[in-house]
Image (cartoon, rainbow, N blue to C red; front, side, top):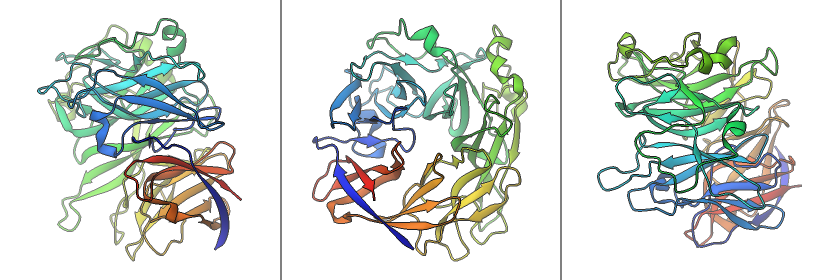
Length: 437
């Protein structure tokens, strides 16, 4: 295996957490990293701030501060960047938190703000509209969203969703946000705006799937570019947990794919003034939401016959190639080692593409422009060329940091990487970068 030398830099040093999202943490220009101030993944409820790191001079700026934090919420975190402009989107808990109404997976929404990176604005708007009425208008949700992700053109947002009436049955949704900037940035709501039980959002949101037998839940989605052209509606792929009825493997995680109709752009106008009907037809009276008509959902992988079936390994989100032909995930090989896998979008064929002899321990990351993937085995980092299959071990001073959290991601110049780790002897999660030689 070839080797790559890496020159490390610790970029943050404050006595608090600096938590990077697992994807889209880098600004469209490549100059800024955005993060929340958690010190551990489960701590969103206690987190108040979204910040930025200027990679040119290590300057830190507060992008948003809830200024209303309690032990119950509201909480902010998991910030992602728009691919074309200075807009960020992040989880925000409902603002009427108290002992009886705590931050939870059904009590949160996608908050966005647009700003000049040199002079950030602390004002937010909601991505989605929220209502708890028995019958909901199209485009409105009745629960909480998280794990947001922009499509490559910035016109769509995907998310994972938990409905207030069926919180345990996680699903995957989408929002159409093509014109949110023109409609909302000029008079974005002030930071003190209340986002309580019901409010209007700036996007049109819906589910891509309503879980029904044998699907227990859907999660960890990604956008898949449509091969028919740049202006075509992208697809969404996700991991679905299926009930098998088998003693040895009662549930299995497989990959599903949703193709939207060509007229999907018109869903907001086509549904204006209409309400979603009862979801009894989906086999669950608890669901008030439906998926818009015209979505074609297919099961992409069928791995029941494998020794270790289904998606496996550390929690990770699916990744897609820029060409839209491949989806990447993790599975166990016949010997039980977690390795990287490519899945053909056309056929569902799975192929192991990494040659690690020990299991991958962290989520992988992908650089679509250079067709490279990073994966970790402990603190050992490998860069995989997805075209040639060549793997390169990265030589770095791993003793400089202790616990690593999340993936090692790629900087915009294709010569650098960034990640989260705690410096040796420190409890605080910091941001690190490295130049690859």
